[in-house]
Every structure is written in C-alpha cells, then in structure tokens.
Length: 323
Length: 260
Image 1 (cartoon, chains in turn red, purple):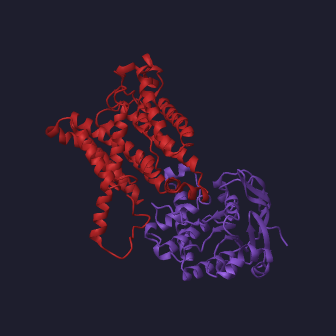
Image 2: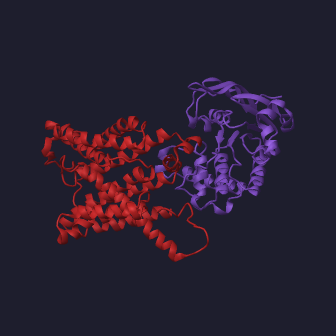
Image 3: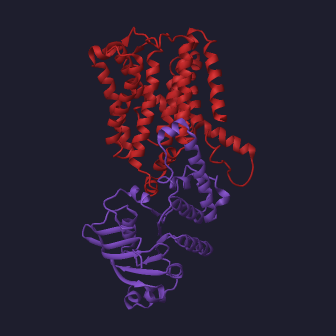
C-alpha cells in the first residue's frame, strides 16, 4: 500500500511537470524520462544480473523500428502492433541469449557488440522497409480508441512507462528471481548447488530486460516521429553503460542518478566546452572505475552511513539497503 | 531395515588415465551421519562431487530415495533434496546473510514471474514466509544476530555456518559437508559438531568428507575409508580404527603424528 502511494505521488508530480513545459523543454523532459527508463532496465541486466551486454540500445531501436513498420507499412492497428513488437523483441533476445550465455561473460560482450553492429547494417541496407540510411519519418501515432495522444498527454504516457519500469525492476530484484540473478553473478557454482539454473536465469534476465528496452523504444518512436540508424548506434549503448557505472551499478537509485546526470551534463557543459562533453564523461568513468566502483550512489551511502555512526556492525536490513 | 536414502552402486570415475574412484558401493540412511575419510588423492572429493552433481560418474549408478539420478544438471540435485556446503566458503557476496539463505530456498519458494511483476498478495506472503524461515535457520546455526549484515563482515568460521544455513534452506534430505572443520578453531569445531548432530536428529542424512580424524571419529556413526579410489574399510569409528589396511594406509600415519 505504501509503495503504491509512492508511485501514485510520483506519477502525479512528474505528470504535472509535463503540463508546465514549453516545446523545447518537453522534448528534453521526455528524453530524460526515456533515458531513466533504459538505465533502470539496463542496470538490472548489467548491475544486478552481471551481464556485460552492449545490445540494450539495440533493442530500444528494434522496438522503435518494429512498431513504426507494423503501423505505417503493414497498417496494423496499434493495439496489435504493440504486442507483436514485444514478441519480436523477445524472439530477438532469445536468439542472442541462448547461444551467447553458453559462453563466458566476455563472449556475451562480443556477441552483443556484433549483434548491435548487425542491426545498424540491416537498417542501412533495409531498403524501403527501414528507409535505409535516412530512416523512417513523417508518420504519426495512430489514434487510440478515437483519441489522439499528443503534447503533455503523451509525456504522461512516458512518465507511466518510466514508473512501470521502475516497479518492474524493483519487484524482480526483490523476488527469488532477483536473488537468483545476483547469486548467478556472485558465484555461479554455489548458485547451481542451491538449485539455481544459472543458464536459464541468465537467458530470462537478458530477455526480460531487452523486452523492457523494446517497449521504451516503441514509446520513443512517437516522440520524435522519426527513426534512423544514426540514433541507435553503439555510442548510445556505451553512454548507457557510463550512466550505470557512474551512478552506481546494481542500485536502482544509482541508475536514475547516472541517467539524469549524464543526460543533463551536456546541456550544462556546452556553453563552457562546446561538444566535447564526451571527454568529461570519459574522465568521470575512469575516476569511477578506479576510485569509486559503487558509483555516486555508493559515495552518498558511505557518507550517510558515516554520519549516522551507529553500532559496531553495518545494519542495512535486507529491506532498506538498496533503493 | 528400510531402504537407504542414498545408495551408490559400483560408482566410478576416470580422469584420462587416472581411475579416481572405482567400483564404490556406499549408502547413507535418513538421520545418519556417515563419514568418508582417506589420504590425499583417495578419491574423496571426486566421490563428493559426483553425489553433489558437479561431475558425472563414468561408471555405476547413484540412487536417491529409490530413484536413479541419471545425467542431471548440477542445479537439479538441489530440487531432489541433495544440498552441499563448500570447503572454501562460497557466499553470495553482494547479499546480506538473510538473502544468502533465501537463495538456498530457490527450489522451494517459487511462484510465477508475472506474480512478481504484479506484486500479488500470494507472492508477498511467500517472500515474507521465506524471510522468516531464513531468520529461523540463521538462529539455528547461531548467526541470528546478524541477519541483516553483509557477508563481508563475517569471520571464516561464521561463513561456514552461513553455508550450513543456506544448504538447510533448501530442505535437504541429504546434506553433504566438504571438510567442514577445515580452518575452524577448536571451539568452532565443537559448535559445528553439535549443529551437525542436531541436523541428523531432524532426520536428515549427513555425509561428511573430512580430513580431521578427531572431529570425524567423534561425530560419525559409520565411517568409510577410501584409498586409491577404492573403499578399503567400512564400519563404526572403532571398527575402522582397528582395521589393518586402514592403519597401514592412513591411521598409521596419524598415530605416529597425532597432529598431522
């Protein structure tokens, strides 16, 4: 009940903001929410299940392209196009995960890198279906039950998507499935001895999070009303990784913090250093990896724990420790 | 006498040219503590790993409760009621003690994933029950005060106790201990022996592989001795200690160097 109230409050506040913004701010706000959404599901895959995959942004692209192609070229109703797109993402995720999780972590990274590159090649060579290098444009969100969602109302859809993703990863993390994911990451041999099917747990984690990225991609497709290969390149996959590592890997709050920080930073930095913000990201990344593997959220936790300065043993109860 | 819980029939394992275990017959009854000893390279660990499911036998059969354990993946053994501890503690380091133990319940506390996502009352109840069971088990092994602590705060001996609580969480019918006394202080060993006796008293079959003779002989009801992959003796600790082949192969050394 308490958590429901929290989500409800967040939904109302974040939705109210949508109605106060102009066109330019709305665009920034929507993309910020989408980055948070992606960071949350990628954090589950990378931070909690410990899978070094570079395909998360690719699934964002698959979701976006698939829904646009189904709606504009195959003229399917949106209510049919959405589940089919999810199904496409699930199948693509299984095709990558089933052979890749047979191998050790390093090969998953390679396989997903190859998959990400293949996706871009297919988009560029896709002819009329994908629109080639120029992508697809000049389409619109079809009316839903006779209503045309646009402006702040569509921003509310994105707010709900973000909160639903948060609820999903939060609940998965707190369930036997989340524990199995962490166990398979921490010590696969011990996890198997406790009855965890390590391989199917990894496949399931990859598939569920990739499908979440695909759903976010569907919503993104009608934000800019254009999709093109440039958007879904590897650069953004790495940005996602930076967000998680700088924010605090394995922590939902860290993912949110990292996404907000790295998305907003270029706007703040551009008056100072123009478009060289990648340099600053790189520096932050190196500092995080070398000195603060728990990310900014870990820094904050340490500070808070230190300032409380209570008993002799760390008393972060299973319930409160990871927000 | 009723049928044994675990039965090894002609079990063998060959690694290339090395016959690590050959033609091994062994059984454990519910509620019994069976010790397996033998000098280094006798095939104890190989036997242990075959029963735990981490390596497949190359000959013979493993029967658990009247069912043959054939070509199963390691994780399937836990579901059949066979759980183990590790000689070198293998905790899940990112989790609290309570969560570590809850992983042990993986095969027992299951509900569909959609219930997780929907946060159904059923899944919440199952989680709450699992957490309270984990607390009980941590109490049982004497770690009840530290349920919310990170595993990194534990001493080696406490880590061993956590291994036991985690294995018990899987509701084992057979629990396997891989040199549980290794690295423990004398007082920790005493406490461990007491815990193992209480586990057996719950009707759980206990199989111990141990180097520490004093620990094993005081604890086990029956002892099997391996040497060069073969069982050379089996019986009560007293019987085994009298066995000439055992004295020659193993205990002879121990008698001349009691602290070896």
